[in-house]
Every structure is written in structure tokens, then in C-alpha cells.
Length: 156
Picture 1: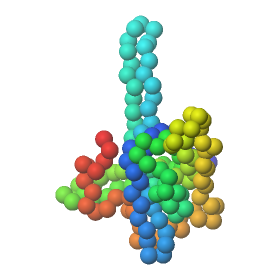
Picture 2: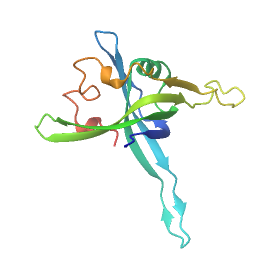
Picture 3: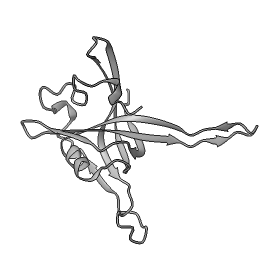
């Protein structure tokens, strides 16, 4: 038995890029930063914060929710799976990209108008079980990275 499951809580690095397909399906892509807090070791050594950047891919209804509610700086929870794929860049070099394909998402931001500083009741969105990513629209094998992407498009 094997398990491919990831849980992330972090801040969105850029507004989601959402694309719609002819059949009405949608895909959203954005970066998510997670940070492990630094500390001071017993011997006085300072260990700094460590930030990791994750490429998040959401399909169908989750993509539409992300388009409406997720913005750069938003704090979110993502539950999903790790997917790694390869592509050839414009110079013909093989490149690899690791993505988090989200199955569930929770928006964790506070109320935007600052009312009483209380958190919103989290908005939880889950991909319906009958819409597994295996049923994604045809012609979307590499949906989050177009052929004109370069290393400059990566968030790090």
C-alpha cells in the first residue's frame, strides 16, 4: 500500500491564474509559501526561518473558487497530492516540476473589513468524488506550464 497525501498551510505568492477549456472545465495555478520558523539552538546558534514554495494546481470547482476568493497574501489550507512531471524548455532541455494537485481547500483569512478581528468561519471546498483528476479535459496534459514558460516565471 502507498499513500500520496500532502497538507499545507501557507500564504499565496501570486493571484491564481485561471484558464477555462472549451468544455467549461477550469484549472487554476498559483504558488504557496510555507515557512518553518527559525529558532536558537541550545548552544546559541541561530537557525533562520526556512520558506518553501509550492506550485498548486486546482481543477474545476476548486479553480473557480480560487479565482473568486484567493488573492496574493491569502492564508489557505490545501489538502492534495504531489505530482511531478517533465517538459522540454525552449532550448530543448528537460525540466522537472513538482506540483500539489489540490483536492480540498480552506480559506483561513480574517474578515477583510477588520470587524472585531475574529476569523471567518473557514470556507471549505472539496472536489466531488466523481470528478477525479483522471477525468480532466483532453489536451491538458501540461496545464500549469505553457510552452513559453521560463525559469523567470518560477516564484524563487
